[in-house]
Image 1 (tube, rainbow, N blue to C red):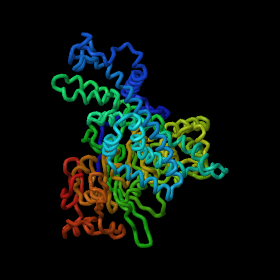
Image 2: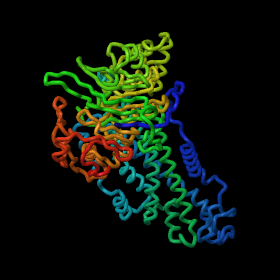
Image 3: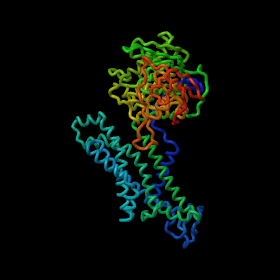
Image 4: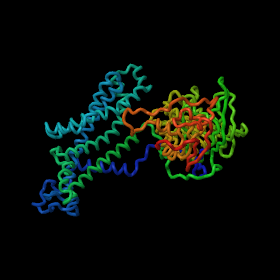
Length: 634
């Protein structure tokens, strides 16, 4: 039996909130302030009331040799008594000029090349990206060393060389965005109206693809500063005074006068980090699909691990669901028991045909076939849905229970606007006027991150993107503020970026409404990152369950081990073959007599094939396996 536990908490009064752009914190604004300060110092260095950075203190008597930082000289002095603070301020100018020039030139060329590759595609794309891959493979530092050895390192040489090296990074990012945007309807409409290729690129594509390029430009700015510093440290610095040259000059005196290297190194480090933080913030600010900001749900978070099943919002006991087919009676859910408590997310995983979706349908009673028989108990907030009256079940569904379907196109009526479908859900279960329901519908669309909800509410499903369609289904599920949310593979048909947004949205809404969530998915990484607990299904049964970190960290059932071993891993060598689970899932018409995984399990013996494994418990994990815990922890 899978038990999902947390402290019981009262359902807070629902409140409306619109998706806002992420609020930039103290670190972001501190980074912006630091960048503005450095730029101002670079521009106004000659006008500021500073000492001459080349004035020898040993002659003027103002600064002593290797003077430590203090009131007289804020950052101290070097071996000739020159003011280190003045040198750092003046050294900011070459760094800013170099970084700005490389970012503007390299970024502009990269954006143009990336748009052409992503829009034209075909052989042009293959040639451009082939050249980019070659440039990525060639070490940039080797090229810079060669250029320095032949022509020397000057600003006029370093800018074009580093700009060319930066082009592939921008081109790759922009190409990916262009491929996605070029297939959108508005681009096809522009071409259908007779717009030239250049106009389509300039008017339709560039404004969109420039956004990620701008965000990456901040990161590239900091990278150029770091590269110049590394070159100077290796003796290939610019002729002008730079932070890198100051670090290189002070590294030989790190014991006698550590401030000579540490202070300019700190200035460089803070500037690079500031550009990185601002780049991350800009990327969030310009995201065309703002979402409600919510924390990521981690399975290993500090949550209680003991509680009684009687406190569960959803309690399932010995649930069996069967229906007739031409080949015999299929028992799609066979003896499932689990508990899900308020505020927890349970991930249900397994191969196709293992019974995951049928488990959710068994809770709601919505089946695509007739003649379905259910046995057992499905208790939601004290009401057994299997024995309750039709009126009680109707009151629970759509009101206490919200459902997100796998395919939003099939869940939404194509001949009705999304607003009318949202209004209907509310008016069926609540005494609410049509005007108030429409206002609430717009509020819900805002809440799930759909821009311009006042306009989108009157659109038909086909007028929305796949991600927006899925957000609409989430809004419908949340319309009556349910306590239990059933999500049947809500991210299957979406790209990885939209998947992450939908999962973050579900996590934040789960916290906002204090819901219990059952998340069905094929993706074990989704469960690892977003579910508090996991139930592994195979052949209509739950074969292992418990806290996600415990199950994935030390899987007991051989099937769980096989699923984890067949999951792609970033720590494996490139082109490594994934482990495959041999054989086919068992027939649910005539299931095996013993363990249902026995025929596909390399460690199965005669007992596994003849005796049904009993439910065992190890710590917080429950499993059904005669030979547990012999797999690799993941």
